[in-house]
Length: 81
Image 1: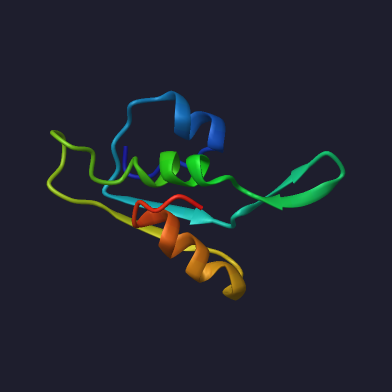
Image 2: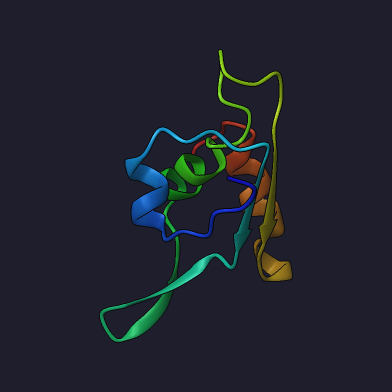
């Protein structure tokens, strides 16, 4: 496959490595309002890039609001939010 588009559910449920993961937006509608993805969800999606033992490296692009950039950089560097 050259490209696959998926939901967070599919991203968590399959062992499909990717050279590049693009997270197009970090907010989800939940219980009547918008909220940010939790850190474990973002880590799980980003973790599809460059799977250990399958690929040498991978990249992840996170498209988020400017005020959330520091938060997601922190999360994806392995720090808990």
